[in-house]
Length: 424
Image 1 (cartoon, rainbow, N blue to C red):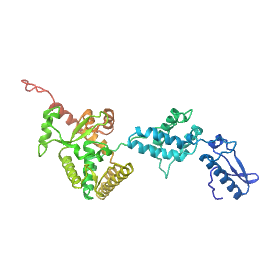
Image 2: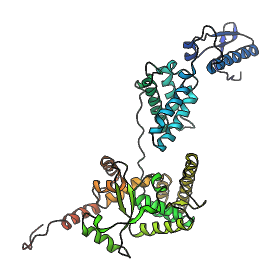
Image 3: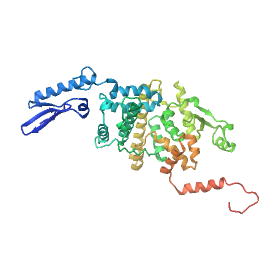
Image 4: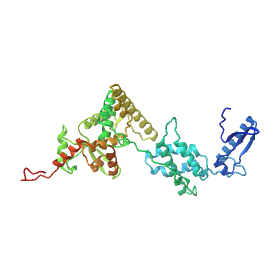
């Protein structure tokens, strides 16, 4: 027998033969809807089940309500609460968080948007959880499921605080474990392969974007909106140690120390992050190209001659999608080149990289060069604890690092006058 897909329609093989029923869900039963016996005539049973479901739809819309069924009040449905939640909470969230919340709230709405929130039980929520964690084409989307349930908890908590519900089943233990965060970083070989691929695809501005990302370690969205006016000369008086400034200036052809002026998110202070040597050269080429096109940002979409950002949120989201596609094309090129060269291990590393991994890569590079945690944090804006976690995961303890430690120890040791031939 072909499967008949009608909500609440049930087929049972009884001693008297095949019989048909309409059986309400737990939520509908709680609202007062009763089960129906639909007899043995399949066509008539299907017609009756569809008629009952039409009554349910009218009841949910508030246009009809049978005598023995609890009237549904639209203002207490999940969709109505979501609408109020968005109005109340979204202005307090960052744009990126708003996009994430909107996506997850859409999933919640499709699950139970028309239902009264106070009719949804812990068992209903657990069933939703299990459906989110169920494999799709053999893959469990654990991160997406976990984040959806986090938003669900935030929504239910807000609903309780605003008297839409009298108890919060979502506050109970749902046996959730946070998915492991991304742990990838780009090795020196991977970084070079990606830059080479960008140049081969005639995307020098994308090459500059990647170099900037793993040089100054800023978030993707902050890099994409970085204005040319933020590129500025760092003055000698800004250095805590004049000798440090002198060494940096000596490395540059024009003797100037140039950098990016950034406002660190945690402290809200402006910090000038020096950009030197090859990174500086790539950045200045990018700025010249952007100026030639009449753009004000450093980075731009080379295929469309426009910035990666926009005032309109929808357009901004579209441009961010184009950016990810541009990076994906570069990554695919790098994977193809390294695979054909026989370096399958490097190809696999590159294939798994995302642009956001370059911020973490910046931390690792500086750690490998002996920078202490608080100096790394001054550049990337990470909290100190985050820097420590990244370095603990990635930073290898090598002979080279031991040599660097000993070298720095002697380099920074106080000079001792008149005590030759003594061990420092």
